[in-house]
Length: 185
Image (tube, rainbow, N blue to C red; front, side):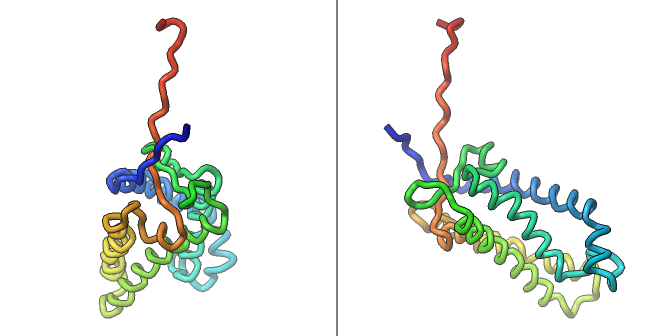
């Protein structure tokens, strides 16, 4: 008998998102520290630091996201945050994701994020360069977040924008049954 799986509640998805966002930011920071010299030597020769090169950073972030998210989804359907909240991403027929579907799902989410940041950067072009322009770009992130998760509230299966594009869904896994030990009986 197959266990009944229910669509993931939005609060569980958001909690897993926080876990995964912290992991992603930590990986970005650690990777930038480790790869700073290689990026500076190979790509950002004219810039004071690699962080000034806006062409490479989105690609670098996407590469880290592939390693963390797409690999986790294709391997077992769960990231670290999804594992903590007993969530799993799978295809609509219940099978696990393959690499192309995981990449489509990730690309949809990542493009939404990058487009929001670019829009904020473009809208803040009149602002002086520096903190004000960066803060203006970051102020568009809640709109990208809403655009991604509002379909969860509308969809009967609780599917987000990336789920709708990739043909996937996020489900809540049942609690594992406790195994009684011989000492207890």
